[in-house]
Image 1 (cartoon, rainbow, N blue to C red):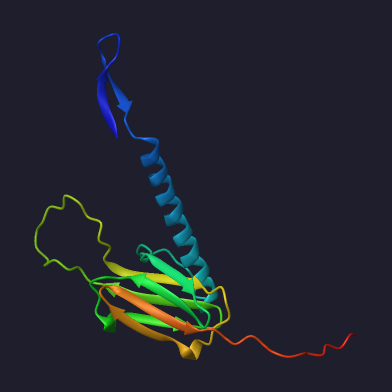
Image 2 (image 1 turned 90 degrees about the vertical axis):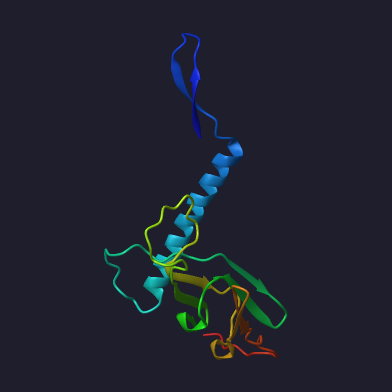
Length: 166
């Protein structure tokens, strides 16, 4: 933030009143946006090989938690205000993609926003999974604005394996 202040000559000057913490938050937010855009780009390149072209803005990426238990990987995505028919989940051995569209909640009328933080429009979140999973084991639940995706881990191979030396 900036404000006007008088200097020793009596003239007005701009003074930066942004705290270091606020600056760090802004920088962190920008790096997060860049990381999400790169993630989206990598997903587009790896899933289907579609050509990227200029067009409408990229989809937004909802906040996501990923954690692991002994038997499964769990992905929790914050997407309040969605109809379940508008959400799709796709998984393969090492990637999960969650897509959808959040429609504008308020009625379409002339309005003046004072603050606008709720994302609307298409969203996409792609996560490279850190452990091998069984894609056919995916289960989902959506409640209280949170989508929970559970993926069973592939069992680790057991026993001895003989490897021929060539």
